Image (cartoon, rainbow, N blue to C red; front, side):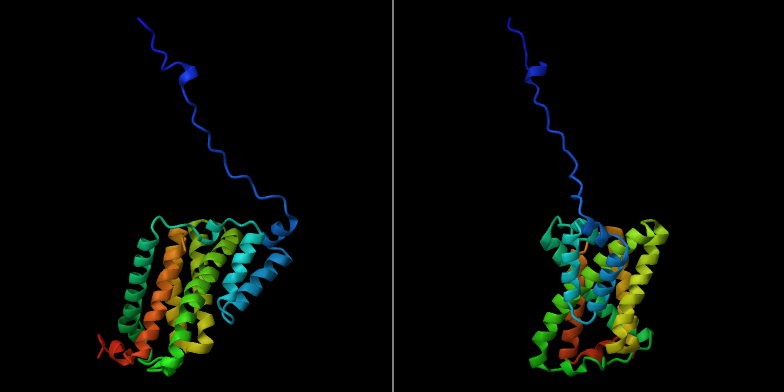
Length: 243
């Protein structure tokens, strides 16, 4: 009778032990960029100042900052989705539904005018349509979400902490700032809408820590808004529920 040696220690294959990722290399400049000294604060001010004026330059600066400061991409929400198609579908559906909800119910309740005077020039304006669609998908969808959710949540999270109270404060602060930057062009109604969008997007980001779905939702929200204006449907939708 032969002996069974299949369970002998020599025959057992050891599984490789997963080692943690190495810490970022010692880089004084990167540490200063991640910190809240003069350089860190200056970069933060530049990014939040440039963002509203030259979208998507603010987001490009955020990506450059993350790379040079050795900040992990996941800390600004750049986490690969399990399904790109599923994430895109959810984001687009959420953005379209949210825009109709805002236009037909929420904004009329707040007393907003049915017509958006800042962008009414887009009504039937084919020459301006493509440029505006590019602006709202790249500038707003990619640019604003990267700056006002990804970057500011990372920076303020490092400053205030990650507790429930701190996270709530971050959502409120970023939403208020997001609304404020829309006031010069869109007036009170635009600022109110942007603040609500910031609250919803900020809450989702605070819970999930993922930004791609929010980018798709933001782009779909703004594209829907542009097409509503282009097809001259604003007044009809604004009076759909409240005559």
